[in-house]
Image 1: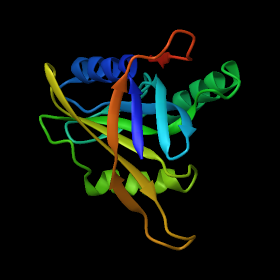
Image 2: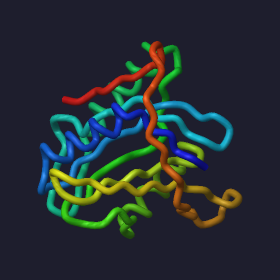
Image 3: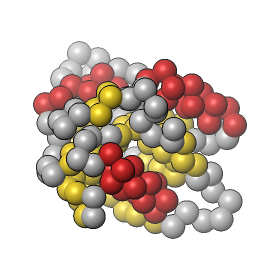
Length: 164
């Protein structure tokens, strides 16, 4: 799987990471599936009711779900939920056990969800990306590393950033 991230999405994740630094932040990735690949051209931020900590982040879920429903409807389904993103300030772009549990919860509602992690500091971010798969209904979730590619979205593509 390759995760294609519109440059605007990456810049917005980095911008939000820098604003909340040294605390964690995050949100949702929006886009579509193309065979095994995912194309992310939209982002929903943490929401004004989110909780940001040194080693944790809890989004404003009600606000995010409302924004997602609106965006899905407004784009006639062109932008849909692909997974989550968050930061590890002064950390590494690797999944923690909490991240793995979160990905497992997401996978119960979304097939092969994404998890993108930005790690570093306000001036320099490194990125890691994973997708979750579950072999069979009762199998244990497996998080596999995914290649990421940053691209410039063509004119006319749905590119949307929702932050509060």
